[in-house]
Amino acid sequence: MIIMRVKADNILCFNDFEINMSYPKKIVNSPVENEWLSERTNFRYKKVNILMGGNATGKTSLGRILMMFMNYFKDGAVARFIDMISDFSRSAHLEIDFVTMNLRLYRFTFKANMKNDDGYDNSDIAIEIKSVRINKMDSYETCAAKLDDGIKCEHTTYDKVDTEGWSFTFPRDITGNTPYSLIGKNSKYLTVLEKVLKTLDPAIRKVEELKDVDNSYVIRLDNRDVIMQDGKIANEAILSSGTKAGIDIAYIIASSICNLHDFYYCDEIFSFVNSDLEKACLSIIIEKLGDDRQLFFTTHNTDVLDMDLPKHSYTFMKKEVRDVRVDISCVYASDYLKKAEDSLKNAVENDLFCIAPELNELYDLIDLN
Picture 1 (cartoon, rainbow, N blue to C red):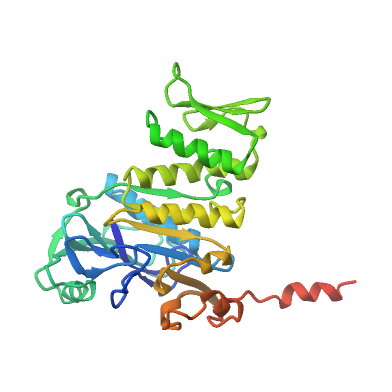
Picture 2 (tube, rainbow, N blue to C red):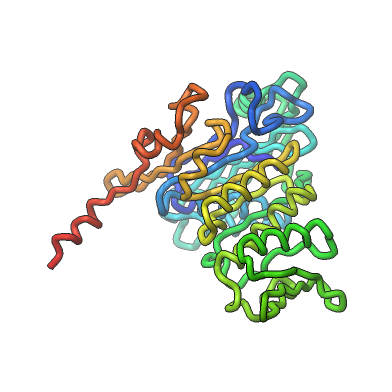
């Protein structure tokens, strides 16, 4: 599944929000290969999406929306969308354009009226899924226009949409005691896991699979062994936060090498990892990201701005308070920086996109006696 556009109103922290993952024209000698559908080269999409912005600007919430949306295709449960409505006293709307491997552009729409005293009736909730064929010369824009006009659209239900696999990784303070994702009986995964963990902690000598116990590994340090079984670490206090983050990082790298998923959402998983290591791991993930696949990657690390990526790969999320309403919007670096030699990092450091946090409240503490 490839996400092309998300529109949300009164969903989690979003009001009249929109983010678009198409881009206008191909880039010659782009460092990100094949940013278009493999059989439809005019249908361009942002293969790599680096999301940046201040705290509480919706980066994690966007991931939650996409995860709930993709999980909908497993069971068709509507309650997950109702749970994401922020204000029950007004209507809510969620619209997502996406592509599957059958070369169709789909539009998923969820609408809910304001909640009445007795809750929601069936008539208050509506879900629609329609699609159009992506023809040889079509772009996203031409197909989206057909969906807008209802021309030659086919309507379907969640169980008739042929979706592929996806992977969402969130910070451990959000997921709590959720087991780490592992890839059992895979030599490539074992190699990746060992190399990542040894890079993060030089005291780690070896990572081995326990032959007599399914889905289990032993991390061997100088003087201790750490057992990991079914994604749970038996004595995790021995490992640093950065080393434990390496388990999530290794899974993403290995699964991209093995083409296990076609969609990745990596939210702040490098918070405890050195900046150079974050850039190195990200570059490997991008390098191994196959055709017709997509990566969303959130970070606060401004060193990532120096990576050799197209300007359109960077989206900055911005929160503004207007009267009693809070709005989150997207600022696309490619709308401001048109030349290849334009420095994205300099633009951010000089606050060209007006996304720097307001610090006056903090500085007021200096006068506090």
